[in-house]
Amino acid sequence: MSAAQQLLNSQVTRDDEAEDSLWTKFTQQRLKAWQISLPPHYAIALYLLGGVAFFVLGFSLLLISWSVEEHTLDYTDFSSDDLLSGRLNAMEIEVTKDMTPPIWVYYELEGFHQNHRRYVKSRDNRQLEASEPISVEARDLRACSPAVMGDAGRPLYPCGLVAHSVFNDSFAFVKQDPGEGNRWTMLDVDSSARTIAWPADVDGGKFANYNPEAKHPSGPKNQELLDMWLIRRFPPVACVQTSMAPSMGYKPLYVGTRDAKVPAAGKGAGSRTVTVADCKGYFTDHPKCNFADIDGNPVPCSGPEYKEVAVPDWGVASGHFMAWMRIAGLPNFRKLWGKIDEPLVKGTRLKVYVASHFVVKPFEGRKAVVISTSSSLGGRNDFLGKGYLLVGSCCFLFGAWFLWNHLFPASS
Image (cartoon, rainbow, N blue to C red; front, side, top):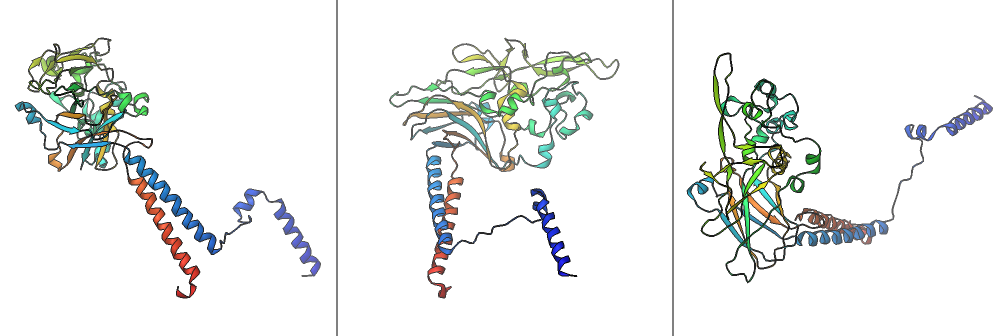
């Protein structure tokens, strides 16, 4: 090939490259590149400065975490049999540092594997959303297997292992301020859904109740066709204990039950008796429930010891239920139970009464109630601060090693 032809070809190639777009140059790997090659003293300085920065950040995060005042009270050995026998399950602590609101109340479980695949899949989102038509046959609720059918052969509402294993312990808090002698006062705990559940769960339409008193197209009411067991745990009206006198202690009341007759399956089969929650007016402004003690004996929710409180987020819409349905990724976890908006000063004695129903002994688990303040980063967690300190230590070690090799190259 002649020199003139070679010159012409090279000119054509340069013209083609000049017409290439930025995207073409990028995809054809013809972009200009710059490979940084730092001098040794620059690299050493960056490692040492990075170590200082990580150490400062790590200590700052630890100080913020240590500013959180936290008390953990294990009550694994408490039992529901204690309530039946009249024994009081109570724990007492003394506040060693001022606790300013908001003060968060958590329950903590150890050894409960909520992330097991079969457990996670055992739920029916259509049922939780109160979608129509209502499923009253087991074959329509296969997603909830194996927790599908309940009392009197009725489908569980809500069904599924996740829902049916919902945490059902309850707590009551009383305090004794410094210098108050033997005077104990009740602490109000805000357990509303908007306080303890995720906003996406509260406002996202993921959890809604069927009206228990509405009639199903087949004739009976919804609460007669479905086993609405969750209403007894999270009713539309709560009976709140207002007095914790030593002679009375903590005696929580539960929604009572009543019998209802519904047509039996099959033509001419007569009727059968089912059990429903003893409540009415669920979707009205003034719902009403009758209550009983743990033995099932009727107890009026009145007088100086008890008072009725309407609960707008009941049943499936309960904040406690929503928090439980948010699956924990690890076997040891905490879930929010409530919030205390009253300050607790140093020296305050705090007594926590527990109605223990959630069983942990069969899987060798443990449970505790946690009372904690919060910081700008949330609750107490030293992991992030310690992680930054570890990275800072590594930067110092690498910087020192590079410095030694730079100063004494013959010894490397």
